[in-house]
Image (cartoon, rainbow, N blue to C red; front, side, top):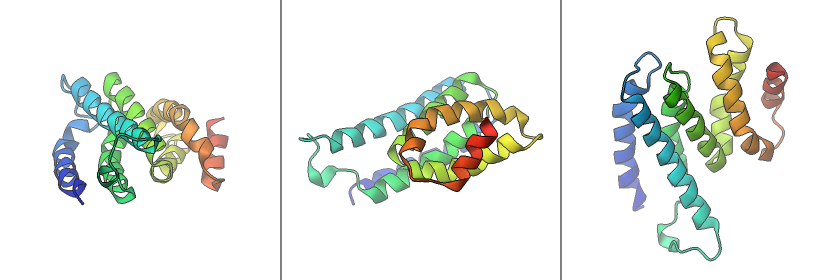
Length: 162
């Protein structure tokens, strides 16, 4: 309950920054925004890891609930996916890292969002510029992918990557 107000404000902030993450909108702000996105996901991932550790210093009433994590990943994921294909190498690398953290925190959500995009980039001649970022992302997300149960689309993407 106490996190919902913070999450609402964070979602509002992230929506206001969306245009700055667009692939055609590059400039001196890209490294800063990439760092922000990556650190946001990194800190959330570390917080979840801390909460899972026994004994945890985080009181039970302050722990992140599954619905909080769902709202967080749902608000961060669109920015990371958009930034993955930008012309700025720093922002692309930060988006890759952010997606790796998201895959650790919520593997099913990350996979459901990214696998169709991976499939499209690997199959399409028109999306050839997206192939390298997708292959890099596939490598980054591999540990999270390995923990999931069998998914037919995952096998198809792996075949395409080879």
